[in-house]
Length: 136
Image 1 (cartoon, rainbow, N blue to C red):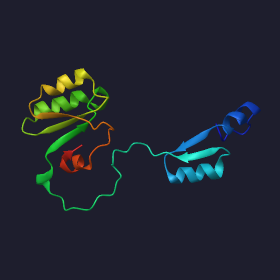
Image 2: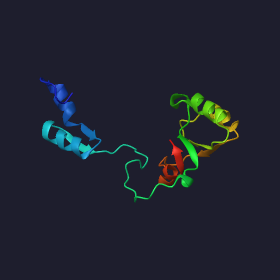
Image 3: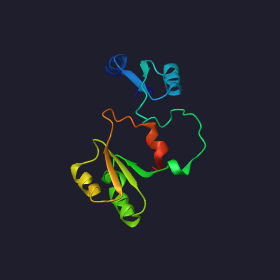
């Protein structure tokens, strides 16, 4: 890597062509001070989670759903289905993305208290989803 004690000519040539992608300004600053190659800031997808929103007083009546984004096996699809079956009076919302397979969608569509909606084409979640969710 860039912080190896001994760098041979082949590694030096490769590092000269390399640009490190840094997930924060802090890391970018550290890399620029510590590493010999180019570095750029490259924020990862955060689905608006860290965006500053105006403070509003909590209003439980606005919390309409228990929401799940990208329902799939890896995110506990059987748990979501079991909860929806066990809590028939609670409304669930599932936002399908490319991680949600057709078999996952079929399983979710059998649940009467779960609404399945497509994700946004660019998979950037609407902050309104967070406002309308009781649990995510």
